[in-house]
Image 1 (cartoon, rainbow, N blue to C red):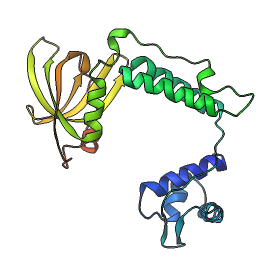
Image 2 (image 1 turned 90 degrees about the vertical axis):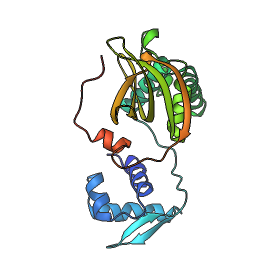
Image 3 (image 1 turned 135 degrees about the horizontal axis):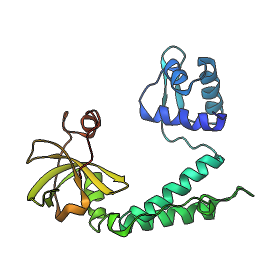
Length: 227
């Protein structure tokens, strides 16, 4: 890992927890504890608000801004594919956001002669009927605000039900979009295909509960995607 990349990763680890030991950072970054101490000292010398001491741990106090980082070819292609994919599969607002992000990157791009992400020869394509439906923006808003949603759902056998769920995550895959949620009707986790959802409405706010949240959903054994 390049040192610049390691510094960004180190800052990310410090942001994630209120106090992190140098030994844990060294294990996560696959470097020596001495290297961690040296990196932290260098960032402190640059004025970054990192506090702590050896043997106790380190914490980030406030905002930490690092100088611009140069991306490698694989990283550029990852960004190009990610932006292209979102533009192809997202709801209209999300697709517009991907185009805007690409434009901002292009305006700020100063690394010549390496092409910006939007100029990379890697693209994405999705069939129109498998893109996010128009209510995708409302559903994303419900996810951010932790609000329940209700909708009519037709399963693979054509049987309709009315569902009230706690949305946990949106998953884009080759066949379209899934909503991972806690279903009040089934009293269990369920994954709903968005192309089978109708008449979605956003309801009241909810508070995550142990056993009904995203971490519990992700901790289950993998299950087949709904057909």
